[in-house]
Image (cartoon, rainbow, N blue to C red; front, side):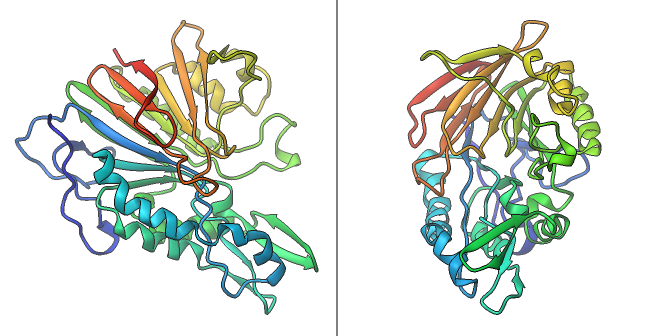
Length: 344
């Protein structure tokens, strides 16, 4: 069986981003190298989300007391980065947001300290396979302690946080949303990584929509979805699309129009409804393991897969195996299949 072979590890910002010819480079990026090798017959992705890594040294004592249960998460995730690729014969990691628990927070001296991005970025250096990230709301968040035994969060420094991610993590060098193209057998996969970690305030949503995909990103996404009539599009994002309450053991399947017509702020849903070529969305944020489906007007279906928080339970990850005709999505923490999706 032909498999992806990680390229040599390179120090600095390009570490882990030299691929074999099995990675076709999207846009103007040049992370690949050419070879006469045939395309692989399988792509294996490890999906992880909501790690909530944090180093609590030096921060306000009350804030630390409320975050102590997260203090070992970076160490646990680093160990996973080392061990999981060989265990599952994986090709890439896809981490859908809330990598860290906060961008900056108030210290014991009452100042704001932002070192979490740099520390998390350092942990990625142990991975022998590429790691692709999407930003979550916590990755952009700040926490202050206005009075004893109380802390509040905001995203006032979200653009500063984005800049820190772009400076320190290779997959964000061109921006915080991007795509990568892989060839698997005769199948072309377009993996799309969105940035929807900015939480809308009451001034910017009508009580239904709780996240923002900015109009520039939507224009880019529209172009990505229309770029090829034959590729398979898979979206990775932090905030999931809305879905209804499950009433039976079967997978919840709803018309996408149930939501795309519900709110004037559902621009992302309207865009997906217009371009019904996306097969799967992988998301996090809600700290649950769940699968639901959306039915497009033309009868096609899009599946949404939520994975639970790795920071809460280290068995919360999924193995995604993509071959030339199907995608196998595992149950959390195992290779045992939960769902098989045809891709042709």
